[in-house]
Length: 105
Image (spheres, rainbow, N blue to C red):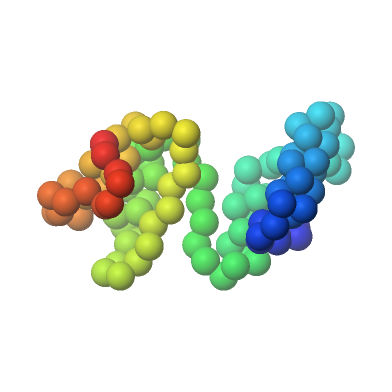
């Protein structure tokens, strides 16, 4: 897996073109295999040396975060919505009442 940062408009266009190729890939093809969640997570962990995971539910993710987060860690969860109240659940689990800046529920 070749992981590259997106720093320019050309990088962004190239990434979108590759995504389009992958989304049109048939099952069992090399391109289709690049969409395998477990393989992507493993590639991120290997390539960046950082832990990565994929979870079926928000509660599974919260449990994983709470079991491994340490003071000073940065946790990233990307979503296009409220994401099942993840930040409230994580903060409650950590015993904090403050929300991260710009975040709610």
